[in-house]
Image (cartoon, rainbow, N blue to C red; front, side, top):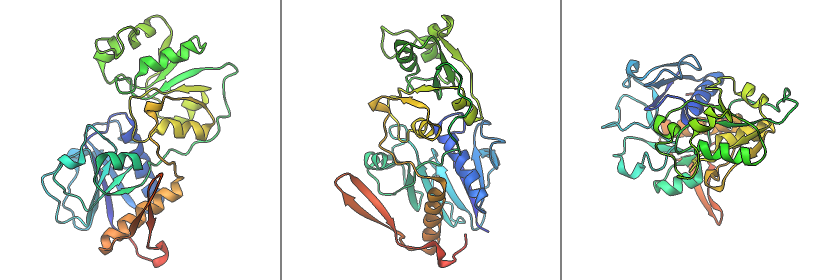
Length: 302
């Protein structure tokens, strides 16, 4: 069996880490041998995983899915190398010497921004259901890392302006200067730490049980400066939690169920191994769409 290895330069809490944990679990659930390697310890134990330093990248016949890393040359022993791009400004594909056979983006808008052709496969999402244990009173929350890009202080402010007495913060502080107000984006606003000291914001930290998070909230506020794939919005839709977003946080991404996602990844990998193009692109006024040209019932195994 072909081994699939996900190699990421980031495995601390965040949207990309969550999506790779979900993807790794999805691969293994569907009979594919996948391991997620990262430089930090957050992902360990949440899927088949290990530290990046323990990964041998030249094993014969493996498929590498590489994220947020710049490697000098393509590992020749690998069957195929796929660049998984989840970013815009912090990882500009045009500035990286190509080491991949194809690129997997998470949204059309992100691919257009990067300006390098690839395919679009949205992020895998944790299996969630409509929350059955909602609290009898409304409760607001903010989900995600507490940092400048997430605009956490703006989400808190918006929730309080809407009449909530307090806001739960599910996430870790990843930028201490921002948290303390050293880098508050709007000078007239309070910092996250000020809201916490006032008892208006309560840091709950990272909660690995995503269903438990949404069960505890009726409303979620999201104010990111930019998103390539708005995972929070997708999860709110699945759990029927009220979502309060900003236009800046809207990625225009499609949300697929996991059956469609694993089918797309299988088709991508099979097509690359066979050495033929399995996708064609059609251009519409609303964007570019790819169509698969190879049915999976050919019986090709990976």
